[in-house]
Length: 484
Image (cartoon, rainbow, N blue to C red; front, side, top):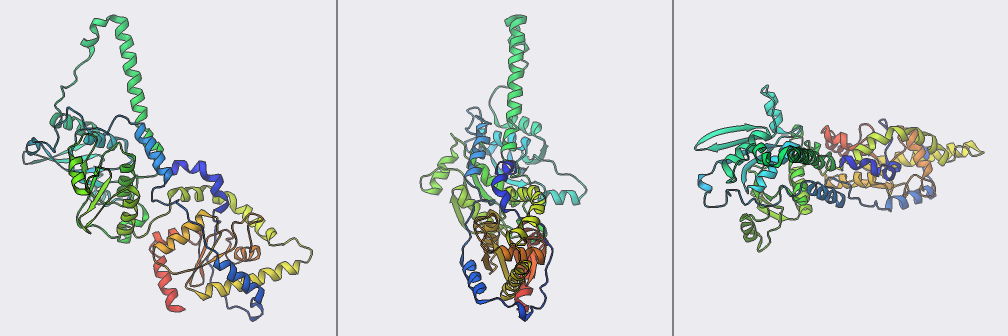
């Protein structure tokens, strides 16, 4: 979804976190104890709840839309079983080659053409091995001094194992072994009777058609940019995430937008799976209907490791993240927006924050007193619990940070400073100015662990998600629990 970030930046910009530095709170001076009125405001702010957001890696309606457009751009490919195919579900199955392994990257253009043909020939792949950036398969190949090429197909033909690298060789193998269609020859003879003018027109039309098809082959990658191209941090092998002992089983066909959403997540979580093609006209749909009690809907996931089985891409996505990821990562859209806009807004935050708190009022001591009192509040807040997070109620970044803490099972205290930082929505300007003085970060969310600033969702010292990616955050929380 990275490609959609430019469209949403105006709506997300006001919520982006600014850079921060770490904070180890000093002893709180007795003269800075908060007053009763301040305590009341703090309790009121803490009671507010953060709005939820769908800007996570779990597919949203926007994902469904862009995936649907990606499928439309490739019609009619990868949707229906070809009448010329020799189905591996038919009587000839025992005489056909066995597709043992397919090294695949969901977002890759050549891999997509191979999967389209797998659907059209109604084939089963015993093990689709994700080979995206950061995958175990790619790392193992590079450790051995080699380079993993995707797509790569490993097959068994008459008891012999053969390997085909690249879409061209794989498609040629498919057409040779699994298609009863006559091979296309040189079409020059077919155009000979049309004469020179007819021949030139025909050649022009064919070239135009080839260019259109070639252009359309790039569209799915553009529409779904950022998805299915690399392993997400929540499944990084360096962090030792849960791994299935047996490959998952997926009933799918390439042209279905919901199947694509599931395959993207399987790639991003680096989960091998058995691919059972079930395109339109596939006899495997009857097999699927028998499993589900009548429905032949795709996608359909079976996990032989847990006994779970389910349709619906949304349910499958939630299951995969909860079972095989260390956390459900926020959408890459938020990271991209943060990387782009945070440096632009940081100077504005530094100027606007003191002004909103009243730094230009006639009595400058009032401003200093308010900020000092707010600092006392913050010291008390961050000393009261191992994990404290300051939020805005309308910020998608804040909602994601809170949801992420909940998903990884970290108890925390949430304190709202208002609905947003813009005038009229900010209810705690002095505390925001105090955060800027203490940490260099005035924007929210702002996470503290054991009284020390971790920062925002992506930025800070080092930020919530970067801390998780480094494998540090949980250890910080446990240390904070022991010291409090």
